[in-house]
Structure formats: C-alpha cells, structure tokens
Length: 177
Image (cartoon, rainbow, N blue to C red; front, top):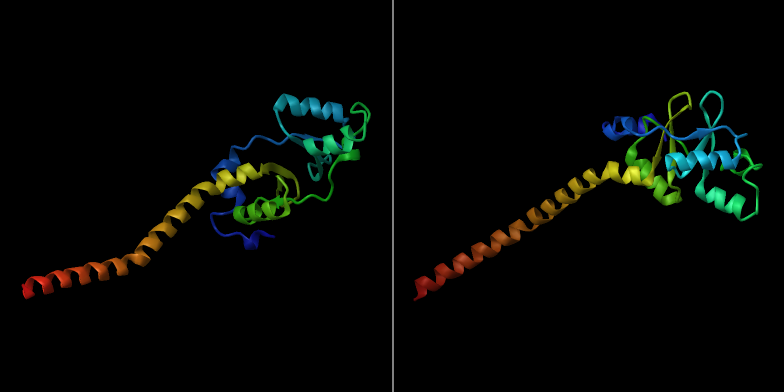
C-alpha cells in the first residue's frame, strides 16, 4: 500500500483524531521486560514499540507476547529483553495511507496494533483497531443512512403507482355509483 492508493480525505494523517493521539510507548531491544512492563503500567498501555536510535520501528511487544513468550515459558522478566520476545516484521502504515484500507487489512489479518511511520520510517503514532473504528464510524453511519434513503427512494415508484391505482379505483367506483 502506498500514498498513491489513498483517497483524498481518507488518509490517516488527515483525520482530526490523528493529531491528538498520545505518543506511543517506545523502548530499545535491550530493555528488560520488567522495565517495559513497569512503563506500560504507568501509561496503561498494552504494548511497547521497539525502535532503533533513529526512531525506526524494529518490532513490537504486546501483552500477548509477554504472556505467551515469557510467562508461559517461565522466563524471568528481570533478565529477558524485549528483543528476545518482540514480534518482528510487523505491518506498518504510512501517514498517507488510507484509513479504510488498513481497517480491512487489520480485520482480515487479525492484528490489533498498527505503527504509523513517516516517509523515513520513523514512528509517528500507534493506532489500534478501536481507533480505526472510531475514525470510520461516522462515515459508516452516513453511508448506512444514504443506503436506507436510496432503498426507500428506490421503492418510491411502487408507492406512487399504488397510490395512483387506488385513486383511479376510487374514481372508477364513484363514477359507477
């Protein structure tokens, strides 16, 4: 996916909510899981994005990674580092990508968190499926409203014909009597 596929007004960066997003929690690969969890707890975040010194994303550690790759393996959070349990090769969006495209991709591929990077690959934001739903909810309601109106208007000619037939029947009955 690239900037060329984004429709005007539907780019991630164009959404008013994008500017007000909280900064994602980041850390280095050598950070211990215990330190990362303490930082996650303070911010009430469910993940930490692993970046290099330039801010480029290297991976992500989620609550699930901690549960399945550390707790389930009886690992010691004081000695295990984030790079040992992080998910690598994650999907990342560009700021200019289309919101609805990424909502569909996240839904189809079953992942919940999406780092958003600039043209240099540096982390700008972290969006969740919930963010995307809140971004698209007003648009979906508008589309549903339009569809309902179109459906009613599509049936309107049947209603008009029925009213005309009824009126003609009334006229015919009154002239016959």
